[in-house]
Amino acid sequence: MIDVTLVGTGGMLPLPERWLTCMWLEYNGKACLTDCGEGTQIALRKHGLKLSRLDAVLITHFHADHVAGLAGLLLSLGNCGKTDSLKIYGGKGTAQIIKNLCCICPFLPFEIEIHELPFNEQSEFSWNGITIKSLPLKHSISCLGYSFTLERKPVFLPEKARMLGIDVKYWNRLHSGNSVEINGKTITPEMVTGEHRRPVKITYITDSLYFDKMAEFASDSNLLISEGMYGDDEYKEKMAEKGHMVFSQSAELAKKSGSELLWLTHYSPALTNPQEYSDMIKSIFPDTVISRDGECVTLK
Amino acid sequence: MIDVTLVGTGGMLPLPERWLTCMWLEYNGKACLTDCGEGTQIALRKHGLKLSRLDAVLITHFHADHVAGLAGLLLSLGNCGKTDSLKIYGGKGTAQIIKNLCCICPFLPFEIEIHELPFNEQSEFSWNGITIKSLPLKHSISCLGYSFTLERKPVFLPEKARMLGIDVKYWNRLHSGNSVEINGKTITPEMVTGEHRRPVKITYITDSLYFDKMAEFASDSNLLISEGMYGDDEYKEKMAEKGHMVFSQSAELAKKSGSELLWLTHYSPALTNPQEYSDMIKSIFPDTVISRDGECVTLK
Image 1 (tube, rainbow over the protein chains, first blue to last red):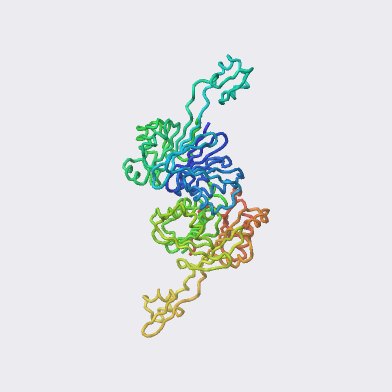
Image 2: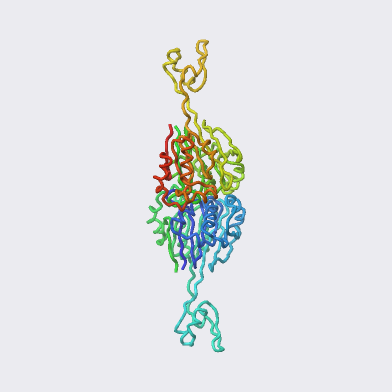
């Protein structure tokens, strides 16, 4: 089970009634935060998310609305007793940005492991059993989109296991992909498992103008979180110039990528009522949520 | 008239229901902000304070709860069209801190004038007609307290002016402290003004343990804003070790300094209901306000 919370939905500026866009993803007792603008630590507390579980931070790019809350977050992690290391992933230059921002928190009780990813090509790494891929986006500065894929065990077939006379104590090992030796005979996982199950996939794309490669990157997502600065198509061209999308472009992306669910986010501060575009957007992609701060889902 | 707003009342961490301690002081169309922790720009917006009036920022010290909101604030100033320079005052090292924090906002449409003050002795400067003095405090790192003094014109005596046959068009010049020449005779301000009026003074002290010099520095304040991490005296010793005060020490400071009004602030996140100490504190200094976020007053 992966729990995903969209902590805030704002872009550019944190507002009294709208926190900045970032995603909290929790799996197997550990959490990963993607982006951390000013006020994110407050919003995490407000939504009841446990800082003590935070194990990794992913950064999309170095604009203030995505990173200005890092120093405060790190201090709060220290205050809540963190001693094991925190992993921070971001594009080239992340180490220098962290160093600069942390001039106001020189004494942290935990290590920071920084992993710099390329801004000019896709990359892939593993965190907490989840495969994370990055995609260079098209924004006013270098920026990365991320996908999170959790492979799932194939279906276990107890009747086959019983037929082969395999004791229950071996079932978990077999289901986890390991062969076992029973009475001199090798039993392989394939002998007791059935169809391959679709992995769980979440894709997070902000900030960027629309381009075709996104759909392939986000393909078959259970949840696509994607930016939309405005609901109205009249802003499409102006937003593209600034390296952003409007709602309809994210809805088209959700459709093309074969995603199951779209959460829109990263609204302009000038967009006071994004919900008014609900009908229009659902006519393009019905399973769209015009997200509010704290939107959450458990993906099984 | 000076308008003072205590934007937040928290210490250490910004909380969902308590912004970090900082003061907005507005006089003659210009505003000065003292301290800027994470979330301050959100709180300013929430309290309806106009960023466009911000002309100066004062920093007490370089702990995150007092400066981590600077980059976001500067970007928001740019977004609301600021083009004239912003003055930033703080202790030695301020320029480097600003440079580091601003790595995420390299293109601001206005100049920043940084004025570094000594951390080891008192200093004085003038902003917007107000005399600002700094006092080195005693905290875990170098820290400054500030006082803001607005001298007031003496009482103008129209009957004296009329007796001397001085035309009304000269009154303002005389009241503002300038002599005038009328029919070959020099008229000095003293000839048409009466008693000297007490200046308007605001003192802002956080973060520090208590020491005697504070009372002299804060003497005769119309408003003393002073820190108190806890309401209970049992924390007095522990807080002194960390360079902080408890409520009763600020109340004693208000009494000794001859201040008119005390606003307590900078509460520990663990202090969930500071108001419960109200009676106890008022028995030491009756004109104490256990401040809430957005406390404001107009000093005439």
